[in-house]
Structure formats: C-alpha cells, structure tokens
Length: 179
Image (cartoon, rainbow, N blue to C red; front, side, top):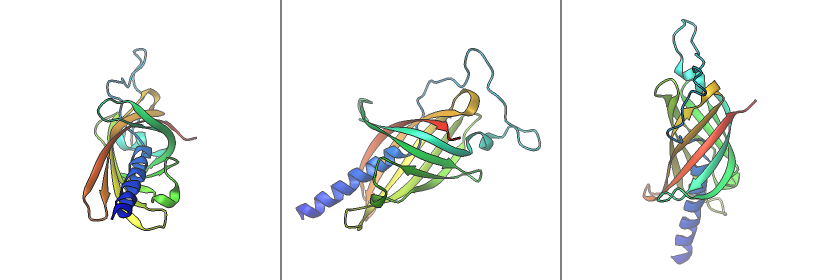
C-alpha cells in the first residue's frame, strides 16, 4: 500500500512538472506597448484584425514552477509550445523525461488583441510504464510588443487514474518565437 502511494505521489510530482513545462502564463500588468509606440496591427485577408494570426507558430518557452502561496521559483526549464490556426496546440517539455509523460495536447483562444488563454492535457506514467494519471494545465497569456514574445501564468491540476484531483501547482512562463 505504501509503495503504491509513493508511486502515485511520484507520478503526481512528475505530472506537476509536466504542467509547469507547459507553455505560458501571463505576468499581469505588462503592457503590450513600449515607449508609447503602437502595437503593430495584423489583419486577415478581408482587412479585419486577426487575433488568431498573432499567436500561431512555435514558441521557445522558459517555464518556472512556483510555490503558489509565495510565488517563489522552485525550478525553471525550457519547453516548446505550438499554437495552430485552428485553435489547437501542443506542448513538449524538457522538465520531465518523455518516457514519463505524453506530449501535451489542447486548445487556445484569443480574448482580445494581445491576451489569450490556453489549456492542455498530458498523461503521466511511472518508471515501469504504467499510467498514473493526467495533468491539465491552464494559463492566461499576454503577447508583448512586436508580437514576438509572450508571458503567461496559470496552474496545473494533477489527477490520478480515477479522476481524483491530487493537487494543484502554479507556474509562469516567458516565451519567444522559434525562428
């Protein structure tokens, strides 16, 4: 019983790390303008503002796992996030060995010209390859001036194989377009 509990806790910690590797979290209060310059406008084929065109692409991301109560950084590691034009996304992280989790798959939406929300899910496994549960990461992000950087903040909910919430963790991210 004790070893089974340790396996679940270990898998849960790995899932939390996966969450933190996620892709982004808004550091609120950062302005999308710099030095009074106006944010560049992106338009679709009909000349209307296109919120979705702003985030689409691959992003190099630095994920910082944080203590939720204090904001203190636990650790930081790189990840890659891909935002597709159809509102889907994928996440891959260096924060957890790939054999211990699946890539994150999810959805995102723009809430205005520079703000967005994304949410993705990945499954976790113990060292023997047995499934231990899943993690759902939700972040609120903000594109920064020039549309080539963003920051985000959010949480990860870690579940066991029965869908019981084991814990919630916090993280922030900063990202630049991969080129």
